[in-house]
Image (cartoon, rainbow, N blue to C red; front, side, top):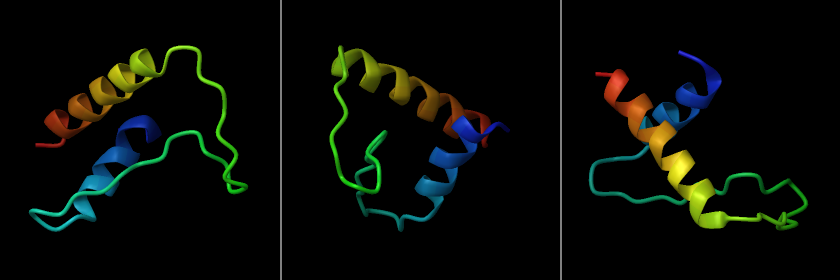
Length: 58
């Protein structure tokens, strides 16, 4: 499993059933918000990677 898949699986496994969390992608330690040309497309891409990782983890 590569890092793009390992990270969301580990993040998901750290949550208890019924808990929710927010994953801030691409935000550096300084807290500066990077410019993203198409945030909806980025969200769809990350969602696809996370879903594929979680489905392949079974």
